[in-house]
Amino acid sequence: MIVALNFAFGHPAGAADKVVKVGNIIPLSGPSASVGQQGKNARDMAVEEINAAGGIESLGGAKIEMLYADSESKPEKGVAEAERLINTEKVNVLTGCWNSAVTYPVTAVAERYGIPFIVPVSVADKITEQGFKNVFRIAAKDSWWTRDQFAFLKDMQAEFGGDVKRLAFVYENGDWGKGFAEQWKKLAQEGGYEVVLDEPYPSTATDLSPVVQKIRRANPDVLLLVSNAADAILLTNTLAEYQVNLKAIIGSGGGHADPSFLQATGENSRYLFDIVEWETDINKPGAKEANEKYKAKYGQNLTGEAVDAYLAMYVLKDALERAGSLDPGKIREALAATRLDSGPGMIVGYDSVEFDESGQNKNASLVIVQVNDLGSGFERITVWPKGARRAGYTPVFPVPQK
Image 1: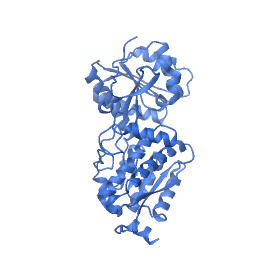
Image 2: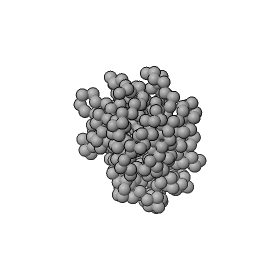
Image 3: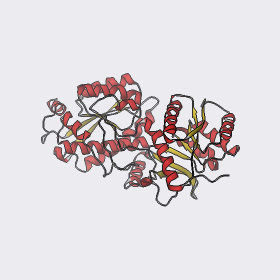
Image 4: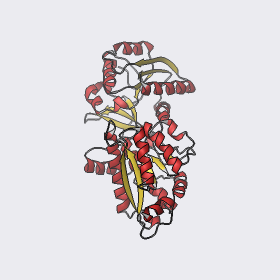
């Protein structure tokens, strides 16, 4: 118990103090259990690598010990587990919680106790808008998805030509779709685009031909979509049926990223663009090897969320090495001064991790893929940012007219 208290309150690590205790609050049961398990697997793989390579050198080779708590995707459970991990387990650092609705209240617990809290991925903007000093988010926040869709569109025009002036917004009518649409409208106005259609629809619809007819009549250059799986499939196939010609279609993850999408749309999805956290073909050193290792261990590819969790452990290692202490204040200072631009964790689409004053990784960005068949069936090919583009692939933009 004395050793644990020493960890918590920052006494120097000696020969007997060989553990950095990391509390992980993630959904391991309930509706988000699958993504919680992916995040756990990625953390474990990174920590196994770090410990096997000698642990934290500045702390005398201290090993990282992972303590997991199941949030069940419930905010009240996440808060209770944060209190337990801090007060009973005496953790040095917290990470979590995937669900933004859980992460948001848990950040207040970490802040109250002065415990550094690394957020691998929870996208709600408000998480880093509370003025807290102990919260550090690695992933891009919600509003940056739309920001990067427009940045991508601008970059494609600069690289390949194709004048884009007219935009159509079509989206499922829940909070997700409406949130994206609000941001699109602001960005379209700022960019000088004309919005020729703003059309919400129920994602439970079984016939979207009226929506597709509106798209065709509006005659946009580019169509931006927010869809769940069933409606993404229905819209894509109906657009092909009505032979709607567009310079580009840009999805927003969700249904367009669902494995069932390509199987159900085939040729109709050719050249579609989609925005995601990460893709397995990303052209970054170590990405292929990390994915192969993860797949061999856990039977599936890394996901964007898992990559953020993997990177989070290397961000922590880097901060601990520079802090040279288990004092929470010194770890916090080291995290705030982070500039990580190399190493096993940097397999993301952007070039470095640096936190701004709010604790947001200011360099975080998303990845854009294009659907195409290069001879082995339809697949998702990373095309943006350009530095992460799959080697040898040239994006098709604007899309050839039918």
